[in-house]
Image 1 (cartoon, rainbow, N blue to C red):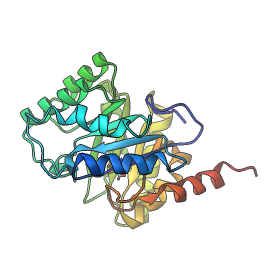
Image 2 (cartoon, rainbow, N blue to C red):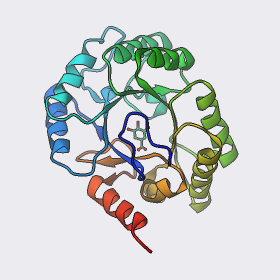
Image 3 (cartoon, protein in one colour):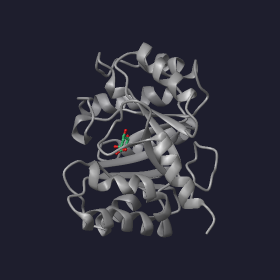
Image 4 (cartoon, helix red, strand yellow):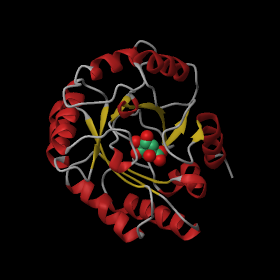
Length: 249
Ligand SMILES: O=C1C[C@@](O)(C(=O)O)C[C@@H](O)[C@@H]1O
């Protein structure tokens, strides 16, 4: 298992908790809940969940939000602005997305999510590297699961662009789709030099959140309170499964 660059290295996949909060008070409360919960390696602040919405001029939200979190915990923060085209709440054109991610990087989170499909993904990955912020390239398909070969091509393209981590989340319709996702993880782990995360969402894909690490996925997103995507499981449930999987024969 290659570990995430922004998480202390471990044999197990990192457990990342999404913080889905409408305002900074709620964000602080969620961070405090996470500080009381064992088994979390990193937090993902889903900035797009802010009820006030985001515009290209919303740069001051990043330091304010990171401060609300760090008042309660030292856990590393992955900062994510998920656009509506990838299942999130942010409605941004390419210029606004680029401007916001640049401001997010300037606020100095441990890591930043960069949607691979965005026009400026490459320059944003470079900007993150120059600022010493780890980049997590991401792609989401909320309707289908492309074949594993195609998933692998996307993971490789993310690595070729210089991302520190390559992540894909897909929606399976049957067991074969789940196997495609697991196969992409397995091959990606063998072929790519960066950590990868492959998730199948929804009830059918839930098992990938529990056993994905065995196939090479470097992290799993688990909940404290509200989740951020279909099929997520709570932190204690994920931890219990991971302990069973790494237990002695
Ligand atoms: O990319 C991902 C993965 C995810 O969509 C999931 O399915 O767990 C949850 C998102 O918050 C995160 O940004």
